[in-house]
Image 1: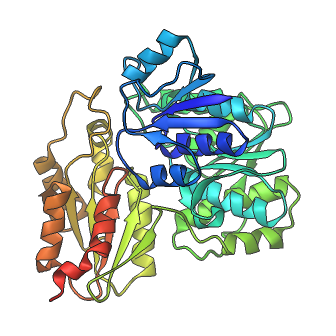
Image 2: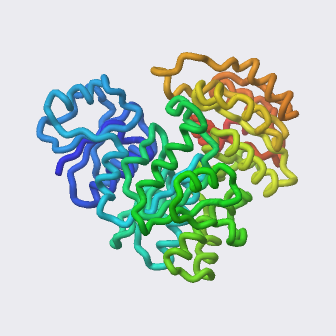
Image 3: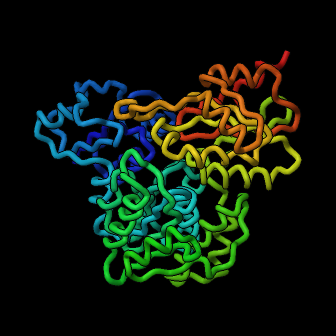
Length: 432
């Protein structure tokens, strides 16, 4: 089968493309700019173009798969319609790919990638040989975001955006949290949680949900659904090699999975202890200057931010914690405004970068960065500076505001990861 993937550089679609390639299909695709994921795809023999005009789509393809970032009137989707090829979005294609497998789906507002990574560690160490699709790159997977296994188990990360996870056919669900996000796609928290109840209804009669019974939102969803579920909070908080109570809560879900799969508890605990984290999840990038530790993190929701900064503070009590945060979309920042204001109380200093406007085609309201800066300073009770563009923020960081022993965390779901890379790669710019 010949498959063309538009937006192939996305973290999900790149994994799908790689799996289809590993299964012997001919895969090609496009994206708008270079990235480490595109380099990885090319290194595995998948041709990728930066031309999204539609001219690169051959007329003889069998399937056209597109990411959420490709709108209906994009030239490539227009071309696919013109040649009459079958079209699927990423989650439709992932659902089709995993339909005949025993699907273990990890869903939730926060912690999906970390929980999927821990579950992959468990399944691989205990001889289950799963196929894996995860929303980050894992050292466990050789720095990749996918794995082609030989068993019938398919472990995947299930995204709720636009109810996309309803395209999947789960047998076991691990549900982390459901406190709300993506309010450009959901009318309210009730609508958001109703989507999760709909997802749970896709389980077969012998299916099971593993979640946190002590979390009121999770409990509300499973009780509204009414099926079989396991309370992960009956398990002890396991020891991990990565910091944070939120990571231990994620690991509890994996202990529940081990119980369902009849994996001995001691084996599960050892597997979890050996989990070392993933790309952009409290990832240590290196050192700036002589001893300023630089960390890159994907956190972009208030609850994620608070938990991650609390974990970093606890693991580094003697370091001054400097955070650069890039808000991700105006819509999210405005609708969760009040929650953002108190999310940064664990830092010593905060620098705000311009909003990463990932959905400029649909967003109408704009975040007032000056008011946002002032309000966070008042509520989080920390010094806050609005730094402007990432280039301006980098210039400010290099101006001498960082001190020996500081911890610099670059946080957000946009291109702020490039700032973390530059701070480490170009630290010689401060040197004589």
